[in-house]
Amino acid sequence: LPECPTVLNLLSSRYEFLVGFFAAVLRREVTLLPQSHASDTLRHIAKDYGAGYCLTNPEQPIDGLPCVGLPPRSPTAQWLEKVPSIPLSQVVAIAFTSGSTGTPSPNRKTWRALIAVAQATASRFGVKGGDSRSVVATVPHQHMFGLEASVMLPIQQGLVMHAGRPLFPEDVRTALEDVPGKAILVTTPFHLRACVSATVHLPPLGMILSATAPLSRDLARQAELKFLAPVKEIFGFAEAGSIASRRTVETDDWLPLDGIVLGQEGPDWTIRASYLPDPVRFPDRVSIHDDETFRVLGRAEDQ
Picture 1 (cartoon, one colour):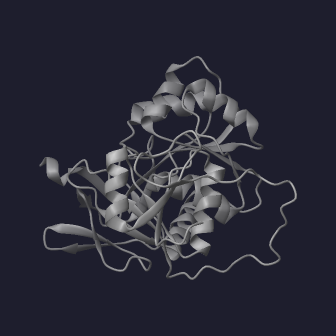
Picture 2: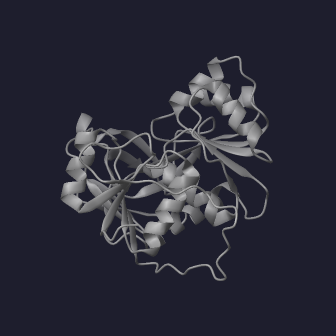
């Protein structure tokens, strides 16, 4: 990789993204994760954050930015004798908000933060290393939820990570047939509704994990009945990552992940965690219950 402080990793293959991401980590380069791949947005971020190049697919260059592609895989590549050690305090990524409520804001992610969220998610859902499960995801790995659930969760728990990003229901079925065991399907309400509405029959699933938008109880119930798998939902935002979960058919309330502490500063509720340098304000209005669960009332900017 070129000598640069930051890199835009736009590789579409989840496997190639993973290779490029950790190559950058070992070079102490910070990976920028914009939510939009529009050329103007990418050039603006590259200028502001010193990105000297993009990691891209050969057929998808970015106008105005130097692009680097991964070389072909070598069948003679050797395993490293020792797994590299990454300092927990090292900033490895900067995730940007969508900008739907203003200018996209940067959020620095340390290696410790990514590990902590992956471990807390695995603990909450009973995902154990070596249980021969797989992860198939319809969400982009450059998105914070996609990075946490479809990249960090598999590599921290020893799961099979499907490299593709299936889009249509038939693509999802094919991807699930490609992997061993009962897979975890990491998806969104939009994709889940398409799969429920289609006539496609998916292979047996271990769990469906949804995020990025509110999931209705009716859709969750339909998915559980059709695919015979529990539907779990993650609540989070770029500033803090994943922070809570629920089984949507059972409750409207969210249970914070292990290590998440809710607090209040004036009229706002905040998130605290050992891996967050400062308290993070909820972007939503929430109602906190005595058992530390909470209910989301709506976006603060909408009220």
